Image (cartoon, rainbow, N blue to C red; front, side, top):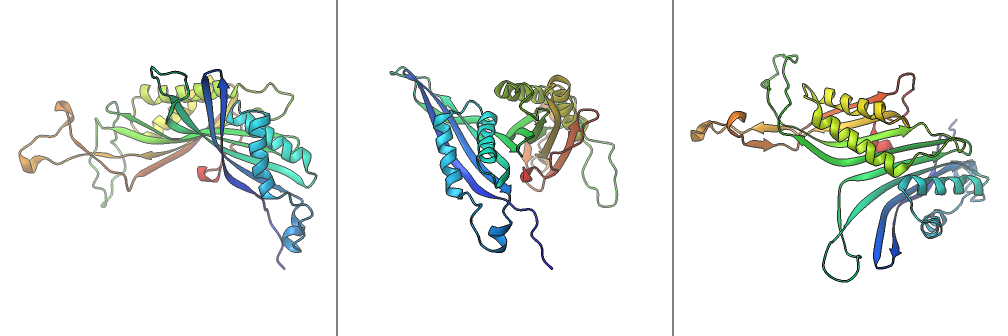
Length: 300
């Protein structure tokens, strides 16, 4: 006999741009907000009754109304406002999950009047997921598409070799990756002081970049751990960090057919391969804490 399992519904990818005017100076918050709701929803699946269903169009309207009524202080805080509203205002909704992508804009400096011109920029896309069940919060922040490179101070050798191994050992190589990371806060209820979301994000990014730059790497796994460990050591509000790091391979081009020597000592030429690529993933935890971020970051 079939039974209904876990289910949710909502409105995905609500694009909302909020302009705040401070005289002639304007400020932009540019978000992509997805709302997912679950709770007492058996009957809509089993009999088609919509008695407990808040229309997805209403969730969309709520996103835009809240952007006006509450403003957008940070992606995390905006998600908290939305999640609390859906769970506390609708008896049939027991859990809300808000996922947000934030896109950056940089002010164009010019000699004209006003400060209201911008160019889309940003080294990465900022991420946030806020989940609320009426009593406990889970906030996971993160980023994706942060491209980084070390042009030296990286090696890869001493690995297992079998009859299919052709990769030469490298004692001076390029290490490059597109960082996709998530980190979970230990803030879980309204009785605790709320983290300073924007400050925390900026500091996490600073620590992971510094760890990437300062680690003499014998493997991308070693670098990943150094990045996560540095965040755990320096940010007490965070209990868990998970990274997914594709290895953006750079191979020395064989220039011998042209009578040219191509080595790192004299300035080398590389072929940047986009696929196939190595994919290194791991979680770094505060001691005594259980992992809760999914191994597949796309499920966040």
